[in-house]
Image 1: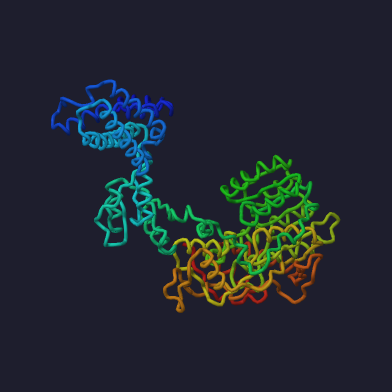
Image 2: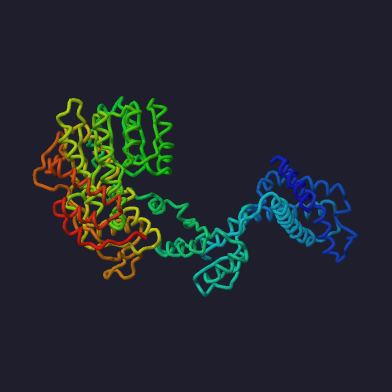
Length: 638
């Protein structure tokens, strides 16, 4: 059987389109004498009719010629078998009517004995033969094609108008086989729609097992997006692939709602102020022709720095990254552009805390500028596991910055965070200590002949980065909610990834040594308002006391350990302006060289002993306004 199918499949696929159309026309012509014989047999109630037009072969030949010519003129043969629906049936019916009329006229002209009813019967029989033959031919072709491709069984969730249109459309697809409908409406369950039975959603696991279903098409555009998201989440929990479908009216209509739903929301739209990308000078002349190292090159900020720096056409771009996947991803992204611009791309897999390796990388690449973006920055994670956080954020910064100074790197820029200002958590404390380390090196190397210019860039939350609430909220909204918020009164400063990267590059051009640069980001944004805007931007409505019938609610979970209601950008009041109005400069107080050395020694001991409690004590002792950190209960690593 399989060999026969394969042989027929090869024959069918070898036929040209014109040949296939000729076969259809020939079929319509060949069916005419058969239909005429059947009509006379019905009329005379005899299997072999005794009288009638069929005995005049010249008349039959004329009718056959007319049938072929009319079919070609009407274009019936151009209708694909899998698209043979109501319109094509109408064309076939019209063709049968014309041929029935021609038969009656020809019988009258030849003085035939057949009554007029014979022509009418012939019309019906010819139509049935023509339509039926196409159905049989289609089923035969599907059987033939099934040898070369297995149809994928799918379940359609929603037996309404869109679901019915979808099932009708999929009947013409050789690769997909609709198995059944599923619908929440009990009134249509157990009925047949488009030849498919409608089941209750509770039967989905059974149907999936019985028919081997792995995909579900969600055809219920009239439901709220939150409801669809909830259904999708449940189906995905059953290990089913879910694909949603808008209504066919939306697809064909001129309404822009569908386009709005499909367009991803740009994080920058929630800034509450105009983006500053175009207002920040590029500073490309500072980086052109230089050998530049970016630590944490595969992270959110690091990768954006790489993208913007490569357009400055440095001589060499060294990508230092601890994550193999992140390094592979950013390297692959930049390879083509680097080759086009003549930039040497050097991917390096390693940790900033590895002193001997860092020195080797800096020396081998004759590094002139270091942009230090590598850091553990998730507050809850570093709060729970402060030892690796401090090992990377503090000791790693000291290793890289010291190596840069010793090897004569011209500029070193530390990427910091607003959480370093009067920190209330261990992540912020680690970044503040990293700032202190850089400030100390700036003061000690500031008088050297070939000194390294150290500077720091401090900014707030970066929209769209891996540590931002934006991806978290988007994921929760996509799942149908709720959106979780620690406190209704929490506020944060925000900037885009592009703004943050541009600020770092600009700071590198302004720095003379030891400065902390911050961006004037306008007023802080209430996170509750941000969550509400994101819900509405996604096409949902907020469910609260004023609107209990809304789609998604905001759930208040309580402040996490070390979390502040409000963040700050400056420790003191001594900020000044820079050549750019939107960039502020702060020269802040810092520890003495002896104090920094003692602090680093204590941190090394605590990290070596994996002593998180000791780290909290160090933070409370050496960082201003950080005494509360030592009172927080340390959660052992799981």
